[in-house]
Figure 1: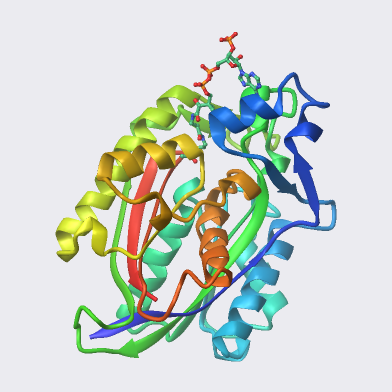
Figure 2: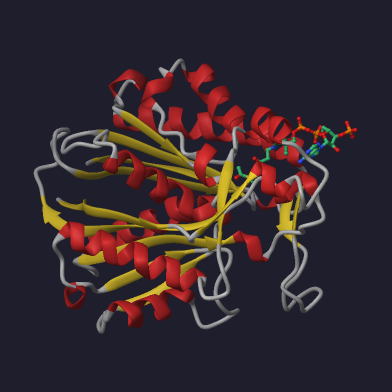
Length: 323
Ligand code: ACO
């Protein structure tokens, strides 16, 4: 049995921090409203010189250094993003060249907020199939570039940033104690494609467009679909909810996270929460949260980690791994 072991994690945030007080000078909102409805206190906003690829490459570099793996040994670069530098080529090829990776393949994955879970699933399958030995999986976004800064119901919720992990193939015995990715599960349902979308692109306005969201519907589905995918993962792997050491959910809204914790009966201290500092960074939020947990020494060798997400599409999914 070949397992994908997570060797390192890294992250990178834009220099500029925008607080709720800063936002209240742009749109009719308040720190109180934003904190109460979302748990967000601040977010990072990319400057002109901070592209999705710039943030993604910096996060990947840190993950590679921590993994002790040379970029020349990487044979797969996957970038999950809904905010690529350009329509094409993929942001992943730019990151590939910035890292000095010369072999294998590089491509983007588009599953919005579920992008990192999708990208990890794809990388894990490449590794298990013997098509990759060492992969860099990145979640990188600059949502500030697709926000309607006159729409207070959406612009207060999102932020920019990037996170990355390095995976390495390792032969294992298939025991429960083995390190690496244990289970992956991804889902989508295109009937909901108009609940959360960007109103631009080559097939519509031919401009970049702005994010549009039916917040209430997204909220309702997020709690249902994320708790569903967690339960499915636990049943499939035979773990009980309290055997999971750390839950690392996509950071969309503190009320979604609280709702899931309540529904599943999970202790709040087992859930990594970075929404207050980063806002919703879409595909970057899980690797950013993983990096925070790592730096706070909450992720140790042997920790059982469950990552889960839901986003536009709708798409959703979960990955269970032993650190
Ligand atoms: N500041 C002040 N008032 C605001 C703001 C704001 N930033 N935004 C909206 N309001 C007002 C509205 O205009 C409305 O006023 P009205 O009653 O006079 O019409 C009032 O606040 C209530 O608005 P609602 O939309 O009903 O507020 P709700 O409690 O539903 O919260 C929110 C809105 C936070 C978007 C919520 O629906 C939500 O969390 N949805 C989930 C969306 C989400 O997290 N998406 C992330 C992307 S998807 C993902 O990652 C899973």
